[in-house]
Image (cartoon, rainbow, N blue to C red):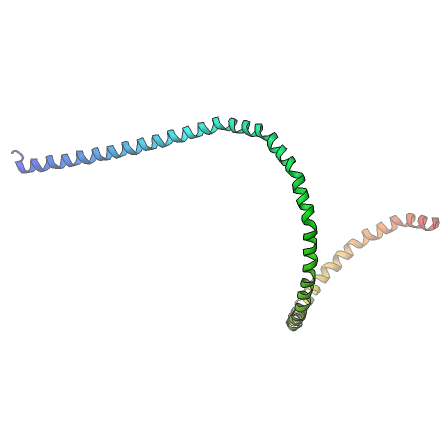
Length: 174
């Protein structure tokens, strides 16, 4: 039993569509590969150009250095003179501004003092609140402190005994 004409035509159509799709995919892949190759080649060219240009750049910099230094040296006296010329103005400006600064400070002082006075009760309350904690911490630490003192006492005494003759000799010299 043979395959009907209609079925054969449908299969041929399907195969043609698949071929077309595959060809399009292949063409797209080739295009992206070519673009990537071009990109890589351009990057390599740029890198190589940079490598070649670096010595030239350095040489140019070296060549220009004396001129640059000479220009700097030449300009230095002018710069210094300008600085010297401007110095009195700077100083007088500072002097002129001082009274204003002091007046502002004096004017602001009452506010500062009032703020301090206003904040004092809070500060004191906080201190009062924290006092028991501070005291308990001190109490907790006391035994340790005493034990450490007791432990160190023999060493302290031995050091004192060792140093006694020197102390006595020094006293006798006086």
